[in-house]
Length: 379
Image (cartoon, rainbow, N blue to C red):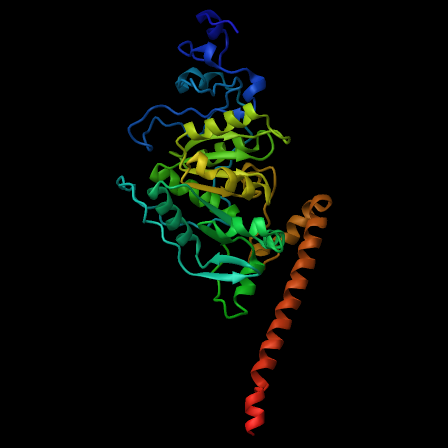
């Protein structure tokens, strides 16, 4: 690649001041989309753009240099992004926005896990949405790599009988009930009821909203090409001041060793506070468990189909379907070829689990009503 100033200026997506020789070829990092923000004393500075801009030439490398937004904004075609919604979806209830917090000294004891309930082998935290945001706030303040799992019925089925996945779940700092059946089951036993469902598709909006105020940097990893970028752009438009640390949509194949190193290095160099992963279950949870300590991001989370919902490539169920716990049915009808087989296996697991629970309940009642052998002999 030529390194002259003339050749760099010929590319409208590369600043004349950029060291072109340090830029890797497109074949190396074409799926790593750089999101470059201007230097600013405050994450809420007025000059911060409302949405990250797309760069068609890869500019992520170990020798990465920043490009000012003025070098790229005028050259991004108006059709580069799909229409961005101007309002938050109706299923996201408004919450009181906190005032920007003062810097908190790094500590290792701010996050403390609370009470949990055992539901079909999963130790799920008894938290509401506000509790979840507070817990993540403390994790970020601690600056210790941790991960969060959003567990639904499908995840419970996958973890049942899978010792490795169960170990990953047990080592998570927070396990959220991202499925109404889990909440309902918790309220029918002695394990302790879960207060509410904490859906990842709602949590992603909450995190973006609070991140725009706190100055948290969010990294988006996974989903189909273009979906993660559109998701990041939409959230940045909805919540001005949101800092996007980076975007990657890796190909659906095993990455080469060089690609893995580039992927990890891009995340580590991004100074991200939150890493949102959309690799699907259980691939995302396994990937996070394998890499979260090395990457050093305070909070990593497999977020499911939330990227698609935010980007608009998939439609979430109406509020009424969500409230009656039938969101799964709406999704199944919207994509039957892919989801009918999955939900059929989920339904079978649910039936078997309920029968097993009923058998245990009946046996426990029978044991309570049957006098012991010693008592019978004394009588």
